[in-house]
Structure formats: C-alpha cells, structure tokens
Image 1: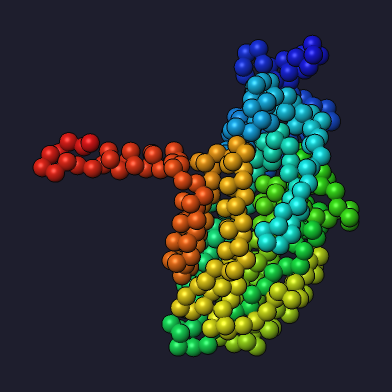
Image 2: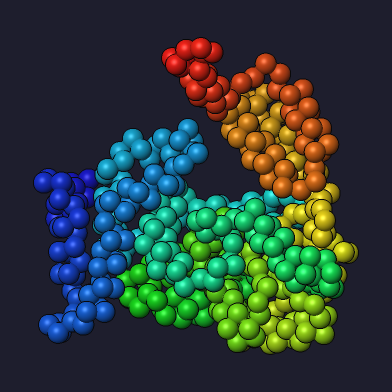
Length: 413
C-alpha cells in the first residue's frame, strides 16, 4: 500500500492537489513515449494536448458522473465511491503509464423480442469509456452527416421518424407521385466490425499513439470467434465506434452516389426515391462498397417497397398517412410491465424507475396512431401499481401549483 501511495504522489502530486499539471509533466517525461525532437509540430502538440485532456482528473471525474447516472444505488457504484478520489487517481495513473487493463466483460442474453447477447463492462471500465468519448466524440461528430440519428446529441428515434415523414412528403410530392423506399440493414453488424479498419478510420482524425493504444485495449477486451472482429453490445464506446465506422458508408451514399433522401439509425437505413430501378442500382452499389469495409447488406431485411405497403423502421410500420407500432414492440412492453411488477414486489427496483420507463415508452408510442393502445397500457400499469406515486409526479404537481395564480390576486400559491 505504501508503494501505491508513493506512485500516486510521484505521478499525480496528490499532496498539493495539482493532479492535472503534475500528470502532464509525467506524461512528457515518460521515456517510453516521449519525443527527443525539439521541433514538435503544432499538429503533434494538439494531439498531445488531447491525450492530456483525456487523462485529466477533471475528465475522469466527469466520466464518473456520467457513468453513475441512474445507477447511484447500485452496490458497485457505492463501493467505488467509498474511496472516489483515490480510485480516480489510480485509474488516471494506469492510463498515463499504459498499465490500464479492463476487467473481463460480463455477458448475458436478452430477448426483446429477438435474442441479443449483451456484454456489460465493469463500472471502472465504463468510466474509461466515458472519458474516451468525452474527448474524441466532439472531434468526430462534426464530420457526421446530418441524417445520422443514433447516439448523438439532438438526434434520436423521434427526430429520425420526423425526418422520415418529411422525406416521404417531398419524394411523393404530397402523395401525388409514387414513393419507393429501400429499407436495409447490415448483416450481423456489431459482430463483423473489423478492428484494423476501425482504427484506420479513427486515425483520420485522432492520429495520436496514446489514444489509439487505449482504444485498442478497449476493443481487445471483447473476445469473439474471429479475432480482430466484433464489438460488444452494451458498451458506450461501441455505440460511438459504430457511428464512426458507418460514417464511411454515409459519405459514400451522400457524396459519391449523391443520394438526397437518406436516413440512418445505427445499422438500419432507408433511402427514398420515385423510381424502383434507381433504388435497385443504389442497393447493388452500396453492397459493393460495404464489402470494401468487410460488411454486407442483410439479404432478407434489405428490400424495396412502396410507402403504401408500410415500411418497418424504428419500431413502427410507417405508411403515408399513419404509423402503427410493431406487434413485437407491444408484446415487449406488456412483458416489461409483468417483469416490473415482479421486481417491485421483490424490492429489486424502485417505483420511480418504473414510472420513468413507462413515461418514456408512452412518449415514444404517442408518435404513432396509438391512442387506444396507450390507454390500455396505462390502465394495466395503474392496476399493477395502485396507490403509488413517483417523485417525478410530485415535482410536476408542485411546479404546477407554484405557477397557479389565485383569481383576482397576483400572488402565486
């Protein structure tokens, strides 16, 4: 333990609480990675500064706050926070000295409704994932196309569906012309992402050996049947890497094929045109491009249909004049309600968390023609959880009461 405290004092200057500056000096003096060339270019310095920001105590503290969000009562979070500063400083030292090694992933199967293998990282490693994304995501996000909607600030499912509606009206000239849609997804996308290609893509914007080393460590923690391929569902970094990897496809479709009406959400995408033949040509060209980055379209899930037949996209069957929730989504919510009831009865989940989940689903379902369905789900929810009230509801009512003005009086209640 004495040696550990000595390491912290040496590397992080814990005594005077100036961890950021001292850590930067140690990074500069690290013989394994230092440059003997005094004429360091401005570009190299910028990249070097980027790694210093990634390793800074401030960034790791921000990463911890983001990693703990909605998980403050989890035992592993509470345990980490017992010695929060020491744990973050130690993590920082490991990253600076390239001795950081993540713990093995915890893998489990979920059915929602299709079977998926989810890999869960240790809480400490999730902090590192957030630390990486805090720094490099802003660099890449400004290079992404407007119509990439997954895992990005200001985007999301609802925004993508709104864009779908706008495009269908434009292409069909308000339902006066035929509107064909190529709805496609990529076969086994997360299982087939190639590490070497991914790293080369990342190097286009992050040409820094330290950051690339850390990314390779994160990627290498996921064991697959084929070495050098695949990313775990469930990691924050996987979501970001997925966007960076398929940004190559986005640029090809928008800048080479000159496609105007294109929307992508993770590995699902749609293209709209007046001509089926044009979409057939796009489909062949896109599949050819995908092979250059070692991917391919799913042969059964990549089809061209008219909008009047209904296009399954982002959980809805989208028609020109209306949209319906997929039956699998409805079953999933009904099953979730039953599971919530069981967990609540066993004190494994708080009512507040259940309420937030249901509220989110209702907001999502509201985007379709689902009035009767939402009414049915809410009735079942109230039957399963009678006489319960969430803090969200209390705060909402308090806010309303405060804003109510007594008739004939300017004083708020």
